[in-house]
Length: 248
Image 1 (cartoon, rainbow, N blue to C red):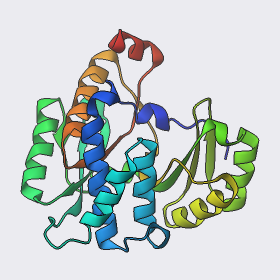
Image 2 (image 1 turned 180 degrees about the horizontal axis):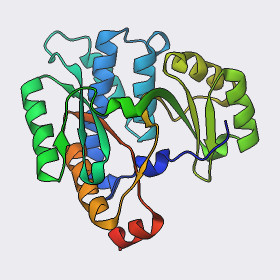
Image 3 (image 1 turned 90 degrees about the horizontal axis):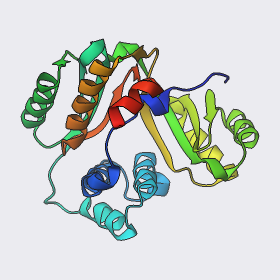
Image 4 (image 1 turned 30 degrees about the vertical axis):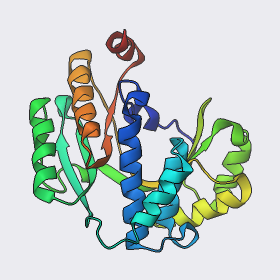
């Protein structure tokens, strides 16, 4: 389980998240509604819904919003959303996976393609990028839930594959098909995690220079701003010096 995870750097997003709070809440609500509609509205019996609620709580989404999203799933007049995945390349040859929930595939595909084209990227075929990633379960705890050794021992006992701890979080990685089992076992020892979800973890990362990084972050921001896009993953790393230059 040794080795430093690059996940925080890979998932880096430029800009203040507070400015996007309402958009974040809307995306979280959509995931909760779809998860509850496809499964059971009881999070204890629906791992996807439980993970969606945990993600919402991690973003401080009000309880009323969460309950309203679950109730919406039980109505008969809401849109039929489906999961769609797009794959493409950004500046510097960076591989990008885009996961979306949409009620109109043509609209979403056109908007995602436009975001790539306008920001130095190219949308590819399904499978053109995902072979460079592994889909895994990722469980996140706040750093103060326990010390690194305690979390490490709990993760080993629960069946996790990798653990990384720093001053902010404990990140636990497990096999995709073991996410519910590992998360449940950890919850019994450490309490409810901040997040528990399936993610795309790159097998290797690319270093990008300042020019490529600037355009790449604009592309990722454009994708994040799309109402249908739920998550984006990319196999890049930006050095501290480049990040300082971009944010100064």
